[in-house]
Every structure is written in C-alpha cells, then in structure tokens.
Amino acid sequence: MSLSAILTEAYNFFRNHIRQLAALTVPILFLQVGIQMWLGMEINSADLENPQFGVPHMLAMMVLLLVFSLLIAALTLFMEVRSHGHEPSTGILLKTSLSFVPPLLLAGVFSGLAILAPVMLFAAFGPIWLVGLVISIYIFARLAYVNFMVVVERLTPLEAIKGSFKFSGPIAFKTLLVLMLYIPLSLIGGTLSSLAQSVGFPLVLVVEVLVAFFGLFVNVALFRLYMVSRPSIDEQV
Image (cartoon, rainbow, N blue to C red; front, side):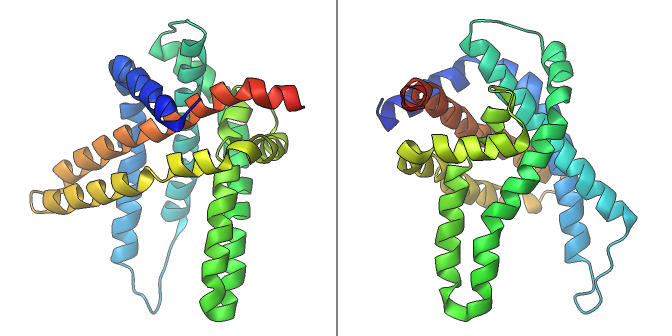
C-alpha cells in the first residue's frame, strides 16, 4: 500500500473517532503537558552555574514517564480493538492499559538509550556529531514499532525492540517519512505557543494539549503502516 493511501486511511480513522480519541487521551495529555511545562519552567529558572534538582523534580520525571506510557498504551489498545471492530468504553480501555505501563516504560527507556547512544558518542568527536545524529534518526525509525509490539504482540521489552528492528527493515523509509510529520507539527505548535504566551499560562496549556492531541495522528499513521505491513513481514519469518 502506498504511503498516501496509508495517510488517507489514518486521517479518516482519526476524523471518524476524534471524540473517542479525545475522551481517552486529552485528560492524560493535560497531566503530561502540565508536568512538562512545570519542569520547563523549573529548568529555565535554575542557576546555570549551580543547577539544583531535588526530589520533586525526580518524582515529576518518573510520573511523566508513567503518564506517557499510559497514554501510548491506551492509544495503541484503542487502535487495536477498533481494528477488530470492537467498541470498548473509555474506562475499560484505561483499566486494561494499566497492565501495559511497566513493559512500555522499560521498552521506552531501553529504546531511548539505543537512539541517543550514537549522537552522544559521536558528539565527543566534534563536527562528526552529525553522523551520530543520522544514525540516531535511523535507529529511531527502526524502533518506531516497539510500543505496538508490546501491546499488540504482547512481547517483552527486549523482544519488542528486537521485533521492531527486524519488522521495520523493509518499511524503514516509509516509517521515516511518517515520523517527519512531527516537524511541521512542532513548528506550528511552537508558533501557537509563542502567540499564547502573551495571554498567560492557561491558554498556553490548552494550546500545548491541542497540539499534542493532533500530534497523535502520527501514531495513528504508524499503526496503520504497521497493520498493513504485518502480513508481508509474517510471510518472511
């Protein structure tokens, strides 16, 4: 299936289920974005020569990771059950999603380390840090399906990482193109947030949540690419 067809189907899914998606994800996004904004303000106000981050900041980071894992679990589970024609309630989805939070959290940590490692290692060699950045972006594309492997395939974190890397080989370029949708979304979000700054924190929070919500379209597109690619991959295994 062509990338344009995948994006069209993802758009139709997002549009047709926008109310359910909002009911499921927006409350989580408010918590996630709120924590991110608080951490951002704390970092901006910190003394650069003697930064001090205490227990509240560490707890906030841990909660942020848990909330993000819950968001991904709920979204992925919703897409999975809807792809099979089921219509579970938001409450059931959230309750079921809780069991996926620990493995998604571990998978996210391991994947994040694998993605950041090249750019951090090459940064020690001056200008060639760009080589590390390219490698990191490539690894990011190859590990884009880890969350789906955990929730849909019910794999362990390490199995999901291996599975995503193997699965994404034939569709790495398409995956990268889908992930590039984050660039215009980030630019639009940054512009809107800057405009909202003059009004105050509440509006900035709402804008950031809205941008994050529409940014979930990228996950929907990746899931569609994942679903249509599964049969061809399974035949090769």
